Every structure is written in C-alpha cells, then in structure tokens.
Image (cartoon, rainbow, N blue to C red; front, side, top):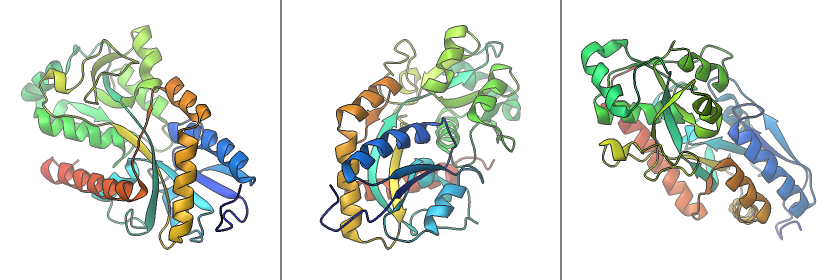
Amino acid sequence: MPAPTGFPMGPVRLVEPFGAGGGPDLLARELAAWLAAAWGQAVVVENVPGEGSTAAPALVAQSPANGHTMLINTSAHAYIGAVSHDLPYHPLDDFTPVAPLTEQAYVFVTGPDSGMTTLHDLAAPAAARRAELTFASTGAGTASHMGAALLNLEAGVTAIHVLPAPGDSIVKVVAKVAAGVIDYLLSPIAIVKPYLEAGTLVALGVSTARRSPWLPDVPTVAEQGIDGYDFPIWYGAWVRAGTSSDIVLELGNSLSEAMTSSDLKGWCALHGVEQLRMTTDDFARFVTSEAERAGAIIRKGPSD
C-alpha cells in the first residue's frame, strides 16, 4: 500500500550505473518487482552506464527531489570523489543516503601464466620490477580500483593502474587478466568463478575478513599477512538531496522490508551476498566514512 505521505504518486525509477547484467542491475530488478507489488505502482530499472560509472548519479542529481528517481549504486559512489574532482555533481552533498542493501567479498585474481599463486608472490616481484606490475579495474574510483590500491599500499606493492578501454565491460577486463595482458584484478567472485574453475584464472586472496562460502579454499588477504585488511564491496540506495525526510524514511523502510523478504533473501543466497544492516542515519555516516577512507588511500598511495 502507498505510504501515508501519499508516496509514491506515480512510477518510480531505479537508476544504476554499470549496465544490464551487472550486480546493481540484477539487484535493482529484484527490488523493482518487490516494490511494485508493495506500492501498487510501476517501478522500472534504468541502466545508465558511461562516464566511468558517473552518468547515472549525474542523472539522479538532476532529477526532481521527490523520491521517484532513486540511485542504486556500489561503494563506488562514496569513493569516486577521491579520484575525480570535476564531476557534474558532489557525491555527498548532492545526494541523501536512503538505505544500505548488500555487501560481498571480491577476490584478487591473476592469469595462470603469471607465476603467482598467493599474495606473497604478488609482493615479491613488485620489489624486483616495481613499475612493471599492472593491475586492472572497472574504472577510477570503483571498488575494484580502491580495494587494489589499499592492498598495494598495505603490502608495499608498486603497480600501474590500467583503466578499462572505452566500452570495455568487466568481462573484457577479466579476459585481459586471464591472457596475461594485465597482471591482476580485484573482481566480483561471481564474474570470475567460471574462470577459476576452468583454470584460466588463479585466485590470490579474498578481500573480506572472512573467507567466502563461494571460495572456501581461498585465504583472505589478512590471512596472508596483511593484518586488518577488510574490503567488502557494498551496495546502497540514494536520492537527490532535498528530498523530503518523510519520503526518505518511507523509501528506507520499504527497502528494508524488501531486503528481509523471502524473495530477496533467496536472491542474496543465490548470488553469494549478505544484507548490509544499519539505520538510514547510520548508513549516511557510513557513506561519509567510506568517502574519507578512499581519500586517505589515494593520499597515501602513489598517483596513478
């Protein structure tokens, strides 16, 4: 049923920045189905990839502040300000955090011909050939970039960041690592699991404090001597700043109900992710702290 505020008054758009078939798109479609049934209004997913994952936030920042256009994004939304200073929006000031959604482990991978099987192997050649090591990402300021930058910083690895070519999907980036064109990558487990099973990629370490149930035999980064390393990738929802607090509260409550529903619990289990639980206020503080964390990583590390 619609909320006492009368929200929503019409169709709601869930805008995501990575394109059809990516993690945010898949989650947004599950949420859209649940919310449409709960609200009795159309809820549509709009894929707006491009501009290094900033086209979608830019669209939401320019939409009416009425809660009918919501951004579904990864932790990249909090990180992007650390590396991009000419955005057409401010990642914190122009948005109101609504709700946390999920978190998941990523995995560092390399090609089978790299000669590396653990993170110790990754650090060793870095000392000998410094600038020759390369790491891939899905774009500057994305989770795959920031997680790798943190590892490099903590492990003393010097490597060149290779940005994806225009139009390159995560699948194309993974293929370059598998072929040895780029040395290593921090990737969603679901994307690289088939490569790992086929032996065309090698897992070096999992990004979270706990091992992933999807890769139970792969040690964490922390287990390999990088004490305290814990870099889960999380998803959340935002609306344009200036949206009524009543609407933000209603959206947050609705998303929380959706995420605890049997449908979304099943989806999370199927995709190897966990629900990220915190209040809307706590999520807002969390987003700010993650933005500060990204800034510290970039300031301490080499420019790339």
